[in-house]
Image (cartoon, rainbow, N blue to C red; front, side):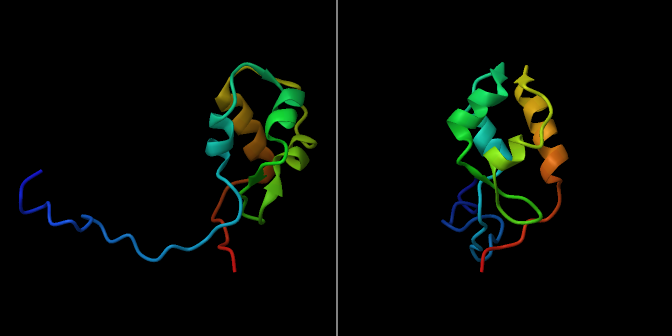
Length: 94
């Protein structure tokens, strides 16, 4: 980085901080180990609240709608959870 770029200001304007309820799915799944049973996911992280386009939802409630009982990999877990919660813009907290 040149001296001209190192003025203490970010290179990109970041904007205002807007609160969003819940945690991203990737943050929750990063705290788990793989492979893992659905019941173990629920025991360890069931109280976690996920960000969804329809508002925050507990992981435990989402897992009730997932038919798979054993996740081989993180990607498999995230795909099944996203099938339930969907994707899209997340509303900000008011």
